[in-house]
Image 1 (spheres, rainbow, N blue to C red):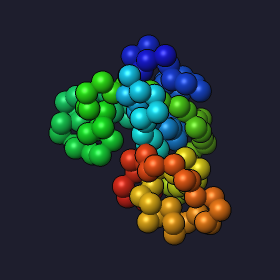
Image 2 (cartoon, rainbow, N blue to C red; image 1 turned 60 degrees about the vertical axis):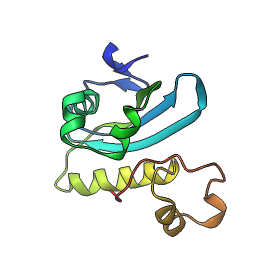
Image 3 (cartoon, rainbow, N blue to C red; image 1 turned 90 degrees about the horizontal axis):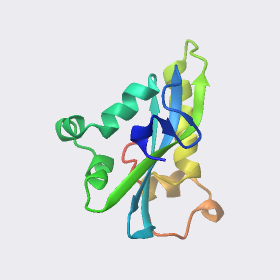
Length: 135
């Protein structure tokens, strides 16, 4: 399924409200070369449209945008949490959920993974995370 189809793995791109998602990048000719980015949004459809816009990516350079622009790279999204009720502390809730997802999928910088994950939970795979700052 491609992002332009209007859907994403795990749900509808147009769900209203708060959401946390995983952006997966992979080489077309080598699926073992992949990268992961976790993100959050108060308006998912708008945020994913920004990620997919070459104009937006050139105006706001980010590491995961650089990876998206690499030759022979494909990407898609996975909805991790959606339709999250907006409470008074919505930004904190989103940060906690994104941090949790960043630890599960190990998308943070290795020094942050070492700080927040117990040794037995750290991956022995090559680093593939694209989240630079903490949520």
